[in-house]
Image 1 (spheres, one colour):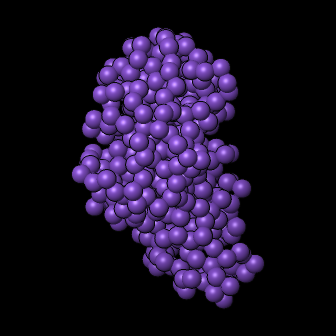
Image 2: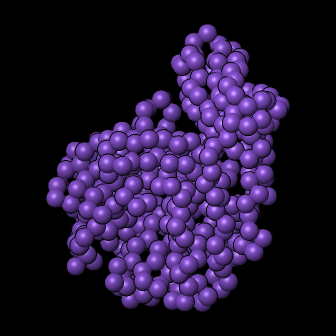
Image 3: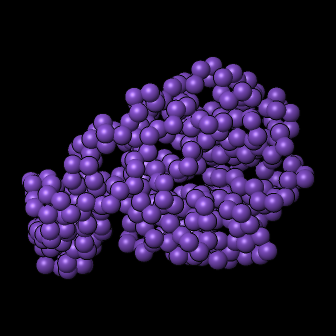
Amino acid sequence: MMKFFSALLIIQLWMATSTQAQWLQVPNIPAEPILALFSEGNDLYAAGANRIYHSKDGGTSWSTSAIIHQDEDEITDLVVVDGIIYAAMIQDGCYISTDGGKNWQKNNAGLTGLGATNLSALAVRGDKIYVATIGAGVFVKPLANPLAPWSPFNTNIPWSNVQSLIADGNQLLAGAGANATLSRNSASSATWSEHSFDRFNGQINLFLDATRSGQVLLGAGSQGLYRSTDDGVKWTHFNPGVGLVERVRFANWHGQVVALLTKPNGSFLRNTTDTGQTWSAFPLAPPKNGLGFDLLAQGGKLFYAASNGLWSLSATVAAREPKEPEMSLGQSFPNPTVDGFARIPFSLRISQNVSLAVIDLQGRVIRKLSLGRLLAGPHEFTIDLNGVAAGMYTYVLRSEDELQVQRMIVLH
């Protein structure tokens, strides 16, 4: 189902991968699922399913915390502030250690309501720590008193299911709901405001993560990557070509932003060097035989937390040099398509072999035209979409070393 992108990835890796750079499994830590990463100064923390691993030397040696609790559970997020460890659990709320993980205390006082102990994310802003829940919104408490009870922080937040929570300077971003919206809160306000980051097309679109690239705010949703130049009020979309994703994590590493995108059947890496205006396949594929959960840059290394352990990349992977695009893909017409056919215009700067494909939100190729070598200049081809279900689709123009994407809507 992903043959089109698999072939592209092989070509890109062959062209751009440094032969000296490779993912290495981090030693002295079990090859078990590592679910979350966090760094504080020179200290690196990695969350296993029910315990925390701590390294003070860039991942060479590790100490292991006590088991957080005996019942089966999973850590969803991890924050360390002044040596105090906060662990968010998917079922049993928040656990805190004030002695480096030797002992753990449950800290669920104030987490009230259905789903209040089903935690999805933690965020620190100023002198407060916030927690997102799957069912009861957001809660807050002061860092000065780690064992203080939590208080609701939900004024005007429209959805109680909050999948992500990101501290961006003085503002908080919450991925509340699944209809292509996020909620924003400034440090000077006790209320939230809702903003669309994409047009809702009937398909799930959760806001999953965000980071800064210079002054530009980069975001991620179920349907792709996004970019905002006004602190998250308005967004533009980039389709990374992998279909719907369930988890995204960003890392700023060696002058680029790297994005980890994970779905049930695989993980993908993309990178940008121009503040999210364009994204490319990262020159190295993720480590094999595992799903990625988190990404973190520390001490010149890029750490990759996965279902089969913790991995690191030390060498700087050669980035692609920016160049003038050799082709330009236009908007399909008509859009929405209502008569079963779509005309797709594009132009080539040089003569080259190209192909067109239409891909659904699950990443499946539903139509493909192998066009062969075309002359430089404008072109237009018609694709038959009869029998294709109504919805949002991506169409892709691919040459031997370049990829361009656009979106179309099919109606009946």
